[in-house]
Image (cartoon, rainbow, N blue to C red; front, side, top):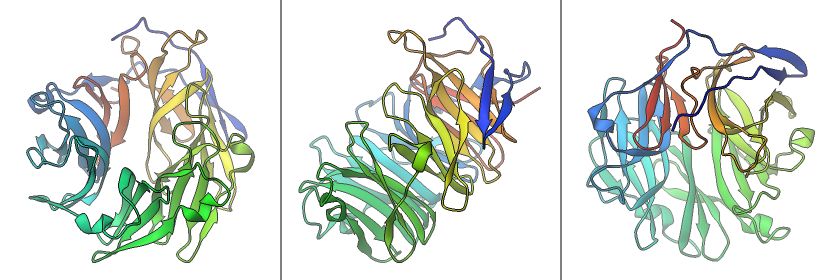
Length: 360
């Protein structure tokens, strides 16, 4: 739903320096993506490699059963329709078009892991074999290559685990019992990898905004990550992209977020303080540090839902890019992704996909 448009001047605090945050460029533009294959679908998770993009979707002819759509740089097509992956796809990751991983939940609540090789799908039952209890939730899939895949799962007995696949076998790399001695309410919430021997796990209470733990694997041991003054409430959602460590700070519900990054020396710095305060919905950052931030400006009236913005981050300057007649209600847009060739998509609900066409 479109709202009356408005624009407010913004400023960024970048590494302690005040940097101008320009108003939207009159030549910037997002256009609805027209593709018959996308008609009527609802988008969920998004992941991409190179010019390939995958997204979990609810197809219009069977909205209760999730499937996967693939964009190959030219067109969109279903790649998991009728495969019986499950009722709801909860995690999605790929290293290439012939190495796609999906975790799904069935209608009866059972979780399964699937692998796609570009032409067919197979269930990976071995991943959950031999665990101490039944898997009650899959909280993340990620990796660096076909022989370096990680999965985090919640177990019925509370001793959640992080599993690693080396191309042949699955191995338990972390057990929640290591944290339960001091915090018996925390669960594993997922993770990410910077490279094969540099992995981060998130742990915390999933239903509240209390403190979260960050544990980093250096190839030999797990160590807790401290964020110091940049995250006084202890909540940081870590991003493994942009050639380094990034994070989104702030309590989970209704409070504003900041964007932080590692200084490369064990410390963290605040990259962005939004003005007006905003809540980050999704971030995509390239290897050069430029990228896209999808968020919602928090209204003064708590009874209002707020409106969305897409900022283009370039050379330390964030520019709002939605045109004056393209302001959307909070929650209308959920994901943003850029391909290696520079195409940028913002995904939303009710078959809404916007493509950025840039300054004219």
